[in-house]
Image (cartoon, rainbow, N blue to C red; front, side, top):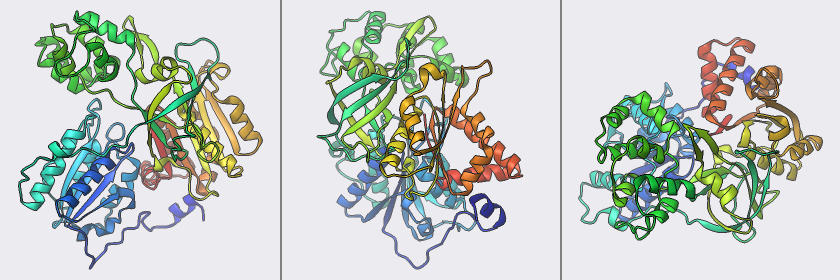
Length: 549
């Protein structure tokens, strides 16, 4: 019986909740839900600290945790990151769905503590942590300490949360703060060589896309198709010089709080190509501008300003006098950027490929550049050293069963993980189990990896290719329209147990999910409520796998 047939004909609940009785749980259970690995680092540090302090604990990925244990748990620590605008990370979705299961009993004997990780540039800051806590409270669980919401610079508040939770559980006050003697065990960056860079887009363009190859023969980083790497960029020198000029400061000035010059700090240490609420909030302590205060207190206006501005805009639009140390004091540490690996680990274990689009555009009568993309595509020569760290993304890996069909939907550089998938499927000799639906602006200039994709179709690694080049006709066309055109095939593949992958910008992901709802309603005669329930079930059970940004 196919997936949809089973769903429509059966009345059983799609998620099985088996309550455990008569079991013994450790004094503290620590769960994490993560996409880039930061929540896992915090959870593992908590596990280590509790062990050092003599309290037994268990640390588990949420998707590996048996939710039926909850009624027997005594103390539960949850560390969870937020994916996009308030979303739960993929490996936390089924945990949350089971928390909402109608057979889940009340949990009046459970004590919990939540540490949320997020990005304050989003409106629903740390929304995943808030969502899980709300459901725990609904079930009658009691907080050990107040929830902590951590911004991108999460280490200090997360470590303090660990110590505060321990002191409350143990009923003791540690003489030495965890902050003074512990650090999150972040894996070291690996140095390697950028061996090759080839422009994929054809013709002259400010936003050229490049194929980049990193050497992995010496490092032998064990990755899987679907994983990504983390890179800390260097900021554009032009932007650094413009900021220093507007502030009327000297680039060689030594900072009191850092052992570097102002220029060095702005190049390598601080985030200047992006703007966040905390930066504006700290700037308000120096700049008493009524207009800036009005902006900060207007939610819609602030969101729009942050989305279209950087640090240079801020100091030009709301000028004030600052010395160098005051200025860097408002900034956030430079943030990592993440790139999907575009090579198959089975097919090419000795290299790591990336697909990098140069971010450069003009608005508000000035030019803007992305820090990481210009660093990788233009700032490094072939043969240069680059530092990276692997970020595993198991929720976006290929299915374990080679017979499972996959539907890969994406736009632009969202082709990267699909190239990795196809290389590994080809290396394993898996035929006609993959369908690619992908788009960009123009076929003649923007068909990334065109020859390779066609070859995968010719050798039957790809069963189908459907493209959508939005600007090649008067009426724009997008990937979601291909889903409507081939809806019968879509439903047939889903009936055979296919996995849907989404990779690209969030807007594309939202449009595809809206189109799926439309197809479920019209082709399966579902109500709006039933279609939404199905889509939620598919996401909870990792039938729809997302890598959106």
